Structures are given as C-alpha cells and as structure tokens.
Figure 1 (cartoon, rainbow, N blue to C red):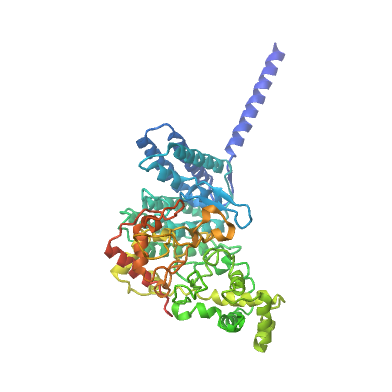
Figure 2 (figure 1 turned 90 degrees about the vertical axis):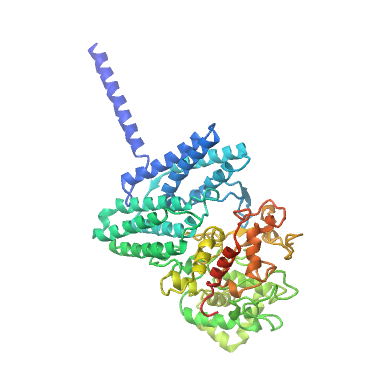
Length: 596
C-alpha cells in the first residue's frame, strides 16, 4: 500500500512539474528583450487579442452591433499600430491597406492579383447601402486570422535606436497619413485614431523612463503628446492641419532628437527618415541614398554633379545633335517643357525631374527602377535621343574635357554607368524644399494667407489630395517607410469634353507587363512646383489648375461617366465649393520653389 501511495505521490509530482513547465512555457510565449518592458509587451499582445476578438464577435450580429464591435477592433488596432507598423511592416501594410486590388510581382514575372483585406475593407463594406455579406465576412475572417498570426509570432527585440526609429516613424505617419483620412475612408475617425497612436508612443516613452538622465526631457515630450492629443479633439473637416504640423509635429521631432542625445543613441545606419530630422518639410528630412543603390559612390560628388549638369544640357548625346535632357526639362518651367506633348511623336506630357529622386519608379508607368535606368530609356527611345549607350559613350569620349573628367572622377571603368550616374547625380540636387509653404510651416516666416492655409487644410483633409500625394514631396511615395511609389487609375479623359467624355487611350502600366488590372494606371507625380508645370495629366489634357480641380471634384473619370472597374480615387465626388477649390489652388501655388 505504501508502495502504491509512494508511486501515486511521485506521479502527482511529475504531473505538477510538467504543468509548471507548461505554464512557464506559456508565460514565455512572447519574448521580452532589451527596449520594451514586460508590461508594455503584454499591453501590445492585449491590444492584438482585443482587436481580433472584437472582429470574431461580429459574426452573426445585427448591423448596429457589428458597427460597434468594428469600432472596438479598430481602436485596439490603432493602439498597437506604432509597434506593429515598425516590427511587422508587411502585415501592417496588409491590415491597413486601401480597399483596392493589389498587383504584386510584375517585375519578377510572378504576377499575383491580391484581393485586399484589413480594416479599410471592412469599414467600406460595413457602411455600404447594400452590404455584400460574403465579402464582408471574408474580410473579417481573414483580418482576424492575420492578427492571430501576428500574435503567435510576437518577439520584440528592440534596442534604443529601434525605439527612436519607431517613434519617429509614427510621428511622421500621423502627419502624413494619420490626419489626412488615408485609412478611415468612411468614418473619418483619423483624428481620434491619431490620438490613440500618440497614447502608445507615450506608453513607450514612460516604459523607458530609467534611460533618461533627467526627467525634464521625458516630461517635455509627454506634455507635447498631451497637447497634440488635446488639439486632435476636433471636427475632421475644419481641423487646422497646418498649425498642427507647425506647432506639434515640428516640436516633437526636435524633442525626439534631444531624447536620442540624452540616451546617447548610436545609430548603425540611416533609414528613410534622417536620424537627425527636426522638420518634416526640409531638404534633410528624407535620406536621398535610401532611394538608390548607387549613392555609395560619393567621392568627388560636387564635381560629378557639375559634370552631370553639363551632360544634362549637352545636345551631342542625341543622334542628330538636336536634343538634350534640358530640351524637354527646362529649368525655368521647373524642368518641364510647357507643352501638351513635346512634339507630334510623343504621346505623353513631359514630367518634371525636380524631386524625381524621391520615388521608386521612373517614367509615368514606372518602367525604370532608378534615375540611372531612366537615362537609358531616354537614350534608346527612337523619338528622343535615338542612340545606344555605346554611342553615347563614344561621343562623350570624343570630347577631351569630358574624357578627362570621366577618368578623374570615376575609378570604375564602367563608362556607360559613370555617365548615367553623373546625370542622375545632378538630377538628385533638384530638391530644394524652399517654397513659400516650406518656409512658413517651418516657422521661418509668417507670410501664409488665410486662403493658403485653408487650401493646405483642404488638400490634406476634405479634398483627400494627400491620400495619394503624400507629404512632404506630395507624390505617390508612401510615408513613413518610402518603399513604394503608388500607381493610380483616376480615369483621365482624352479631351476636356465633360458631356461625352472618353477615357484616354493610353494604357499606361499595362503596356509594360500586360496585367489586365493595370490598364490606365500611372505613377502619382509630385505637385510641387505645379504652378510652373502646366499642362497636366499624362496626356496634358488640362491646361489650368481649375480644370484639374474640376476633374477631381466631379469624381475623376467615373464622375464624367467613364465606366471602369479599377478606379482608385477614394471618393465618388468631393463636393467642394468654388471658394474651397480656389483655396486648394492657392495652396498649391505656394509649393513653387524660390528659384522658379
């Protein structure tokens, strides 16, 4: 009997031991390493859990109940956004993607058409007049499953410089997409949601309180967040985004630099946003080398830029000695040519090369992946330079001064590439960020009119311009990671006829890879210097900004009666008044750089 009892006790001890080990394993499901405390990691996991649990509870509920549960799920998603967006960018991007079909893998010839998932998809479907239950339920199920996948793979390993990068990204995200309505397409809850993400930033700062040498720096940052949250308690349409960026975003960026100095943070390298960024709208906010693999070649860069400028203006690079880069890209017109198309042989309007460095695709259909690659496209085009790169190299070497410069400036013997690199290096200098707008939002002068301020607030708010033309470049390169430059189908017409409008015949991106879902898609260009770059659109159909604004106000091609399945504008029509249209135009005119 004693033997049986002894065995039973031993068995019970083993069971208890195994149970204890299992519990410990359960507790260690989420790795907590340097940077974020255990409490904060637990909070992050809690937000994930509450978000997908609220989505799961939507199934089978009445429409009002579903809307309430969606709001809860979205709230917790926004609370976890700063950490998720930094530590798991691909999943964050999917979970927060616009409700439009995604095309991936064209360049690698592994094209995939992706049905969108995520919160924007749920929101748009949930508030449709006639709800497609199957589409809505799919979006809920897949979004919930993705959040659960994220939870199952949580392993936060953040060093001090990661935390600074995470916070800088989120501050920039608030300024560039958060307050613009980019990811709240129906409910316009962007201001409240931005306040929620600020709460998480504050939690992260408080969790790292021991790292501050003096509490004043931490307290100043927390107070700046609280002040911003207070101002975000405002009506979406009348919110003063200009003053918010000027008074809050700028201050927070400066304070963050002070924090990283206080923590003695050493960054291993630069990301898209400068490690010492103090203004969003400045020439040193975004790192140029983040957009090119070729900027490591910075020796004698000033001389290379000067050489590139000479080549940019030299007609000897074209077959008939009658065309240079500067022939179509005229400096006084902000590097455009003022024509609908350059000549009868061209089908597209000449885009500006100012600010061209800040993008991931070149030409209007994004067929080139770099500025150096774009030069090749111009050289080989029969209606432009009509040459081979070998012929260009030959002509450059026939010029004794050029030949000497190539030899002096480049150690590499890749003459073809060196010539292209010099031209690209010059183009990369055409980003001044010294317009009236830039100087005012940085606080260097106080010359902005009330109409111009209203125009900026409309551009980044009610008019939804900034949901495609992202700050600070106001092009299609998506902040704060700047890894993608978007292409859009907005339904540009062939003529200005608004009664019997016909879609432009140019198939855009489709011509490159023949992807059906990319017919009539074009890269989103910058609107900087737009007052100098008329006419507008890929085909130069509009000669005035008033015509452009009328097109958007009507709802793009769809608003003109052009039937299509893939238009990407996030609205049916804008319902802007004449006064509001004039204000947006007044703002856009303030984006003209000083030298133009």
